[in-house]
Image 1 (cartoon, rainbow, N blue to C red):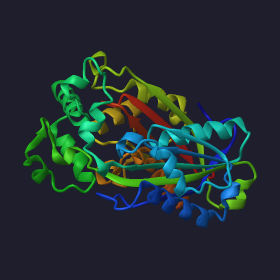
Image 2 (image 1 turned 90 degrees about the vertical axis):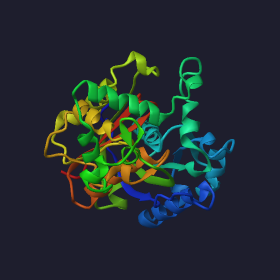
Image 3 (image 1 turned 120 degrees about the vertical axis):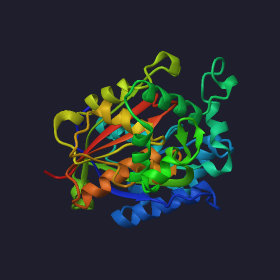
Image 4 (image 1 turned 30 degrees about the vertical axis):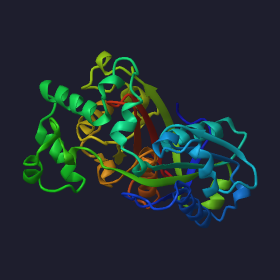
Length: 341
């Protein structure tokens, strides 16, 4: 849907992506919250709504999202919510809440400590328990099937996959194409390496926006669409849910200077570029994208943070942020961000 009430991002924060963070996940959250409070001058009492996206079983700790509140501050009590999803979906709920209009400020957090377990085994348990999980179909194996579908359809080549990885800083094309397969036709550089980290932002509506920043970044539209959980029922070379989400968010109502896409397997960039109809003048993943840093459960929100940061810095006027969840791009969320016109 497109915005009915102006809502802006007034501050963003993100931790480095750690291969194995030594402290608790709440420490990652607290780092972002302290940075946001310092940047805005807001007190905890002024953040009327707090929402986080994380995954309890990622770290093997029941109700870890409750313990993460230690990083926010449990006092004073405010409206609080949680989604068992990437932080981008927490942003969607917060944006809708501010559209309703009963609160004017919201703190949005995405965090994850994936180093506690084997992510290929953990996320295999999210697949269909009767037809897929017994086969051990993990995300990398499914991405290999999706990559093979693209190659067989003549819609991409292994050199295209390597080119995406090279743009993220993985190395030269020749060296990448000489690497061995890890999930044929995917090589190690085609798969984002999971890490620990957090991202967060402050959303504000109404007159307070101008009190808190001179460079607000407006979220003019957001949408989220879902496809079948069974990859066999889908055309894996396309992403109609991404196309529908982009249309719902109003992405085609103006030119896009940049797009940050949640590409955790290189073939996904080809699919997303085609579904979004991105033009040559749109810079795709100038940050390197998730292939350069994949803080699981914060990777999608980090795409929003990256677009907002570049717009606030004057490097872009209008951008698109994308997040995905589920096997082979099953769920897709699109947000359209703009600076002052």
